[in-house]
Length: 220
Image (tube, rainbow, N blue to C red; front, top):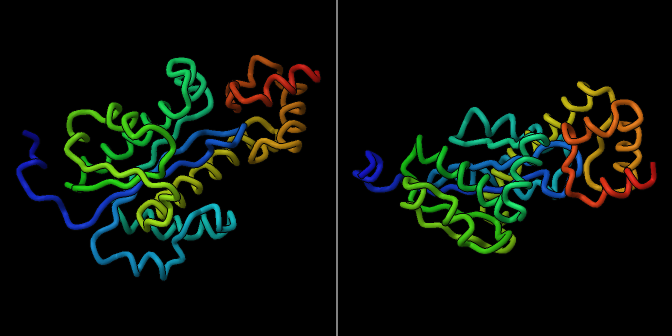
């Protein structure tokens, strides 16, 4: 039995969420956040809600307050590692489950949480199977629109802030403005990247299984 298993769970629960899943450029980031019992109102006062309802500037500001004040975990999968893992799993939901499981386990190393809430992105068994021995001691709940839970909403903000930071760093490193999302501005940025760095470097900044790759390579 693990040392954590000798004691009752700490009051509160953890939530996980991801960012970058629909963005061609940049990493996939999964964050976990532990919300102690009684902190829900504090999070609401801080403006914590689904990061998709917040501006990038607001996301970064709230994340700067959350990071030093709460137990959390960031699992950032850069484009090269993402492409490697996607090639192994061949299923985005299984890759997401792997990342959520890692975030949960990282938090369980620091606090004996009894319950975890995640947004529903696929078969719940994917996450259960991805959890290792310690993680399987936690009650896992997957919810549609999971960001309504304050812990999940806080995790969504931490994940988005990390994604934005890393996307900006990639843009600086490669000298090309790498846009969010997967629309026409992204295709234009991909074309500019290919002209400057060539096809062989694309996997260092982009998720290659997106249809954007085939469209841009076909156009060029």
